[in-house]
Image (tube, rainbow, N blue to C red):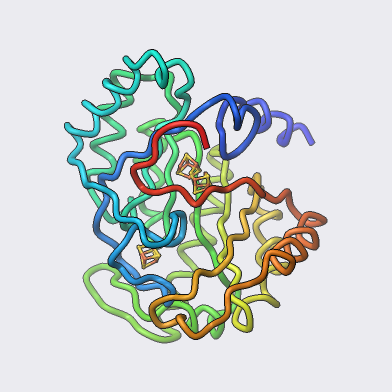
Length: 273
Ligand code: CLF
Ligand code: SF4
């Protein structure tokens, strides 16, 4: 209970994790084009579908351009006073891009009061955590869609890890191990962690409570169950209805708090949610 109170305190003003979602804003910096995995519902033509509105392509920036953008936003009389969070969420996987770390370094030096937030598929999370801690990362989102290797192998087509391309169950095993190890260590390091899970009817429905149980035990703050957008290899899978999505969230609320106000932002979104 003490830990939850501490985390509630820590997320004040963060529009995705806690209070102030209508009053405080976030700015995404689209500095991360490369991705190291292939989710079955991703076309790769647009922003990372694990945390973005479908069909949207953000304009890429380099770290210096990102810093200039932050300066411009913070100087804006309209946006500046509301801005609390600087986030990197794509358009690919932030941890697969050196520019992510450089951008946080530059922005953190000049704007230390902005909370640094990052969203990832988790493949490189265990090995990135020390650097993220040294950069002062405040909050972390990891997209986890399965507990079982067999299920994950139906969702992910391939991964590239340490320069080697893996497919099938070998890929799924490495990815799941990295995701759960990364989440567990991030929680222990005191980060506020959210897990996004894409609800894929007929594929991972039955595992969603199992994901919820496992991440709750690790100290994850909140879970965000997102609806599948049928596209790419999963174009034939029906999207969950609003009623089914609500039912899944309600059932999981008994295990771990559920986020229900996600706007599936683009990787260069700026402002209130
Ligand atoms: Fe951005 Fe994501 Fe941080 Fe928020 S968004 S990196 S946690 S600052 Fe928020 Fe947007 Fe939903 Fe993401 S509404 S898509 S949950
Ligand atoms: Fe696409 Fe994001 Fe999955 Fe990479 S992690 S394949 S960008 S949805």
